[in-house]
Image (cartoon, rainbow over all chains, first blue to last red; front, side):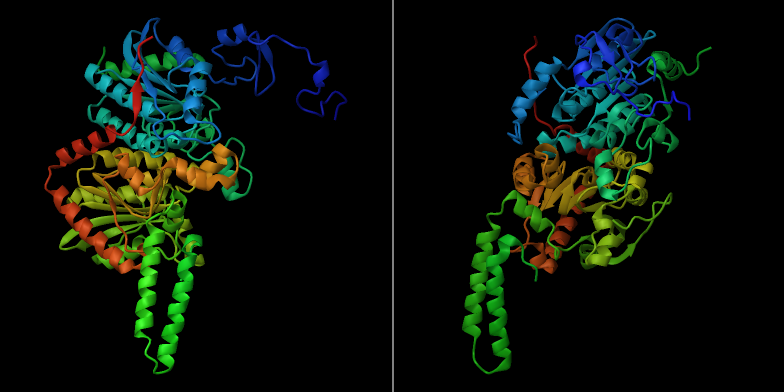
Length: 284
Length: 320
C-alpha cells in the first residue's frame, strides 16, 4: 500500500479549524462531501457534479424544470384541518402552522397544469419538506381532483412522489386516502388516459402502496429510496443488516417494479418523448 | 381462560364459580343459588368492564389470544368450504387464507387474514402478517369470484403487512396498490369485516369494499399504537396515549363515516362466545350480500368509488 493512501474517509478537520461559509451560498454534497456554490448546483439541475447525487428538490423546482415556461397552479386553496385534535409531542395544529411557515406551501402536494414540448399535462408534485411529504386528506383530495381534471380535459396525468407515507396525525383518514386515490386512478384507467408515476427520493409507506406504484409507467431518479416499510423497521424485524443498495431505485428496477431510471437532466426530454408517443400513436 | 389486565376482577369471580362447581360435583350440597348469584355477579361485572373500554383496552381485546380468527368463522359459518391456495406466481402465503363456500345457498368467495392458534402455528401463519403473495392470492380469488359472479367476503385481522426483506423484493407496495385499484373496479359485491386488528395498508389491502364493518372490540388505523408511539414520541411507552390520539375504535370509525356500522359482540367479547359471534356474523353476511346482489355491477362500482371519494376532511383557505 502506498504512503499516499488515505486511511480515514471523510472530513478530519476539527470544528474549531472549520472555515465558515455563509448559508445559501455554498452547498456541500451529502454523499461525497463535494462543496460547490449553490448557483453551480442549481445550474446542474440540483445534481452534485462530482457524484451525480440527486438532491431533494421541491414541487416548484420540478415545475420550473419540466413545463414550457408558463403553468397554472390548481386547487391550492385546499388546506389541512386538525379535526381529530391529534396531539403527540407537538399538536398537529402547530405542526401545520410551522410547516406552512417553513415551506411557504399550503400542503405536501402542489398541482400544476401546463405544457411539456407543447403537449398538455397535469403534474402533481409532493414536497418532502412539508411534514415529510405525508399524505393526509388534502393530498388525497388534490389527487382526486387532478384525476377529474385530466378526465374532463383529456390530458395525461403525472405524479411526482416524495413522501414518507401516510400522515399519522390524520389516522384512519390518511389510510383511506390510499383507497381514495387508487379508486380515482381506476377511473382514469377506464378512460384510457395515461398516468405517469415518477418516484423520487424518498417514496415509502402508504404512498408507494397506492398511487405511486399504479402508473402505466413507473420511473424514478437514480439512487432514490423506494419501499413499503422503511429500512429501519425492516432491519429491526429481520435483525440483520440490509444489503447494499436495498430499496434503491436501481434495486426496484432490477426486481421489475420500475420501467426505467432517468437522470434529472434528461427527464424533460424523456417525458416529451413519452407524451408524443402516447398522444400521437399514428403520426407520420 | 386468559384474563387481560383490566379483566382481573372477573378472574376471581370465575375462580369462585369453579370452586363451587367442584363442591357440587363432589358432594350432595345444593349450590344452585350460589352459582346463580355468582353468575349474575359476573354478568354485572362484565357489563361494567366492557362498556367503558379505552382505545388501548380495545386494542388488547382485539389481540386476545382466545379471540376467534378467520378460519374459525369460515369453518363455523360456511357449508362445503373448499380452501384454495397459491397466487399462481410465487407461492402460497399462510397469513392470508381463502376459498369458496356457501352461506344459505349462496356461493361466496371468502378471504381472510389468519393468525396462528398456538406458538407453532403463530410462526407458521407469520402472526397474520402477509407477504406480497398473500395479497396476490387474494386478488386471484377475487378475480375468480368476478368471473363467476360470486360475492366476496373479506375478514380482516392483521398487525400489518410483513415488513421483511423478501417482501420488499417481491413488491409488497405494488401488491397492495394493485389490490386497491382492482377492488375499486371489481364487478361483484365486496363486504369487509374487521374481526380483530386492522393495521394500516396490510388491512386495507383486502379491505376496500362496498360495505366495511367492524366488530365492536376491534381497531382500524393507519399505524399500530406501538409504532405510532415509537415514531412520534420516540419511545415505546406511549402506546396508550397513541391509541387515544389515533381514535382507532369502531365507534370512532363509525362517527367519522369511514365504516358502515359496528357489529355488537357477545358480552365479554367475541372470545367469550365464539359460536354466538359466528352466528351474528353469518346472518349479517347473508343480509348484506343479498342486498348488494340486487344492484347492477356498474351501480355498485360507482357507489363504492363515490363512498371513498367522500373520505377526508379539509378546509378551503381564502385566496391570497
